[in-house]
Length: 279
Length: 292
Image (tube, rainbow over all chains, first blue to last red; front, side, top):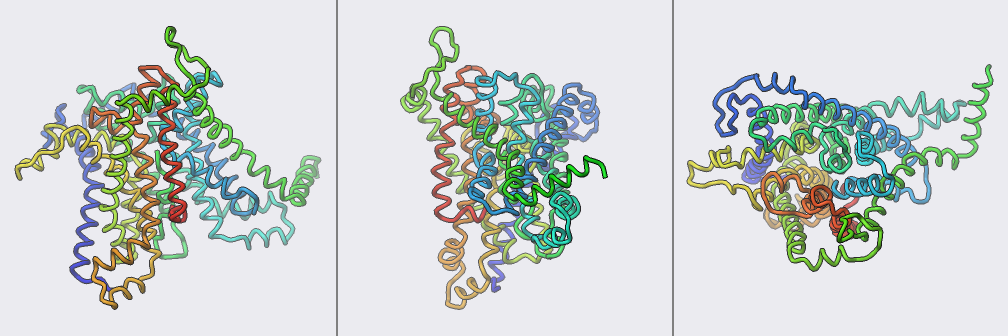
């Protein structure tokens, strides 16, 4: 395709501007995590690892970390189960209301998190009379994590086609055997990718969490209750960097796992694309 | 062969003969969950928005009426908050379209496959991660002695400080990847031959962009704007951290927490739903759903 050299340069500059805009704050917080001084002024005075030590031994941070991990694992487990079932139904059967189901699965991400959070809060506290706890957080997170697993699994099932499954059935395998030896192995990496993304999404979520949590604190909630305490800021910076790494690494791995093994084109973000991270 | 295995075989055979039953079993879990946990909760939200607080005890009374919505419409402050939120959401969407187009076009039409794959990952990774940390970082960066003022000082400028401009900036930052990826996907679908044809027919870059690229990329832009718009409508974290002004999300948050007026919070939470439903209907008409 013809692109004039001037145009090419302008596009390069535009790309660099967008990338700088996206990454400079992430680099800044990484530097602050090593900041020697309690003051948050720029430029930083000197670098130290002390705050990492303080953060790792901070009981509040440790507790919040484990709460986050438990919530993430619970939500991921539910999302994996329900997302896989739904993906097989939608991509292997034709039935009335199929598009509605896809829409219903995406809806918790298309609507603002505060709506999901507020709706669940009203239901738990006013109708069901359930105390808010880690369990209610898992219900909330699972609701918007299903779509992540679903998207990954559906993309894989569409790409792999039905011929292997038909061959298995023709050779006399029943539907369970076919699932176990044909469908599941095809899906496996897509499910790992979806699970990693769901976990990252849950780990990072704050709005739905705020509305569904009881006395516990997840890592984002811990940050939100401590960001205004000048004494805690150095530790908040470290926790922030930890949270970035904890969510970026699963996303990176998921992206590698869901790459098309045959095609060379990167394609429009196989890992669910933009349609899956609204919280 | 034990009876258990026999039973398994029998079950599998029954399932094979009855694909409808198989389908129902597959769908029961996910659809049940979404109907009960999600749509059921949304229904409760709408009901709760019609409840009221007892004037004396402050307890929630399950009597139905539109008084919360009346309060929402008739209180000038609330009207202003809704307008401010929608306006900022629109400005954020605009800023993200402008920022996203060059990088999306570069990824889709200019970059080599290798660079393209790298750029997709580079844009995708922050989209998924560390939302709160990013807002918090901007709080540090925009503070009086922060990096923004430090960088602008030598050229005699200063940053926006905390306020509406800061909120707009932070929202634009947060949702940028949500705009880049759909536009990239949309541009990738435009055949190069169309752009070349426009060029051959004498269309200068700006003309080609306006008359060929933009109309064809429109569904993708609308798809991206669903996210930038919806996410801004429901957020209270960024306004809390980098401004002292109220957005729709702040009203919901403070009424569930401190003010303890759940019915009013529920009524406010239906505002983004209403706006987004209208938005989604328009988006479907322009074919944006294929670009999600």
